[in-house]
Image 1 (cartoon, helix red, strand yellow):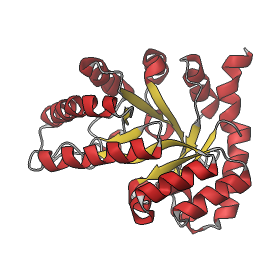
Image 2 (cartoon, helix red, strand yellow):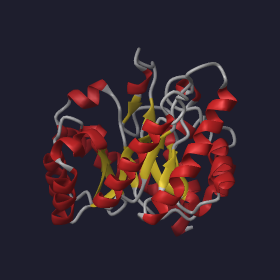
Image 3 (cartoon, one colour):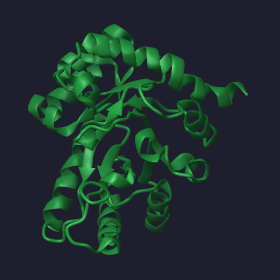
Image 4 (cartoon, one colour):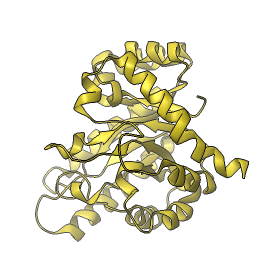
Length: 276
């Protein structure tokens, strides 16, 4: 259980105080928070409640959306606010969902992302916040994430050259990639966060909500966990599930299912490298 983090979206019906309380009761030592519910609860109030709970904050989601050429100043300002929020919360990383296309020029969109992240990196470094680029499954390239592979994200991280810019390894986004094992090894200490959820079929009409609790779908968490651990990652496995059935379930039941999946499927892969 010392490696498990519950992302707020997995039990999105819970308020911030309810989430913190549930994690304490179930022995889950860390949480991943989202900006909207944190702002509703109050950033300073949430930071105080987190400190009182003794929980760690593995991530704040989300920053990013940096590809629209018409609102770059506004996007940069909002990301600086997100960095400030992450710093106040003591979040280990600010996850960047970089944004989709606003025209048909994909290379230009990626260039705008790189330029914007490079501008944000010094501000993040001053506040001891890690900007975690999240490559997303290609199905989301047009509307959410023009970085589709871990290789693309790492190429950008290396080009920016700031220790404040790293990557997220999210199983649902990278499991399909034939280069994933090589790229995880390449990432090494630049893995800011390991997020887990499963790729389920048939996909729902809203593909974004096609992520299940580990064990519901097709991903081999043993292999990916072992790769992440071999790369040197010793942090939390943050369970981030988007699925209508999970959202409709009793949060107590969801906690029980996530804890069981973590123990049976996720943790063994993370620990196999250490035991080997």
